[in-house]
Length: 332
Ligand code: SF4
Ligand SMILES: [Zn+2]
Image (spheres, rainbow, N blue to C red):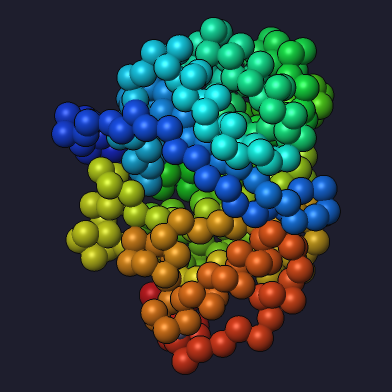
């Protein structure tokens, strides 16, 4: 499941950038609005600076620079800071991101896992979301967490696309759609909700192909049992292969119009599960963007759609640049 040329290119960029990176080791948390059980709710996000993604440290995905934020804090310090972050949130929907895999014991040790579960149970949240690559989602690991955790557990899996060729050759993800499907089935069998992340516009494909790919992937993920779909339009992260292409003028992040189109097409196809997007760096050169004049309005409409699931927010959006976007899809 690896294209050796792409893997080697990513590995070489990664090793150089890792030598320069100092890591942050900071716990960051914030509140945001999200959609849960048919209504808009307050959600809390905690970024836990574990040692980072094992796949990302070795080589990793072409667009991912999270590994440079990894920390070297001991378990006791991480657990104490996690409790502090949690105390400031008070939300029904809690998301904890390690920028890697919560179920990887090299990232989240048995001791840290126990402390996090205790703190989450005490906080009385309704739903607890983490993220993991499929290979760490074993029956034993899921069963262990489920036996101790009180709120509903949701696991986010970065499938990115249901197309194995794109995932292998453009993203260097290192796992297959079948790996994802098996992990999703295991989650479902253990009453774990599955959230699937899709990447809009990986490198080396055209914008119009990217739109088609993300729409198809969302429907494939829903069919595989995903309980919600989250679309991440590309944002250019430092120390990545995608950043190198972008600096050379060989890559443009997707238009926000493309994201609107994707959300509309998926909604029209009625996948039966919530579909959302919280684009990072929307309207900025490194994020999904339009012409500059309409970015804020369009990004706001996407956000409102995501937290309400009301497709009306995506209707009636217009700007002079919409024609440029349509030309771009035809002529790129
Ligand atoms: S995108 Fe996910 S799997 Fe890929 S390197 Fe980053 S954290 Fe690891
Ligand atoms: Zn515009």
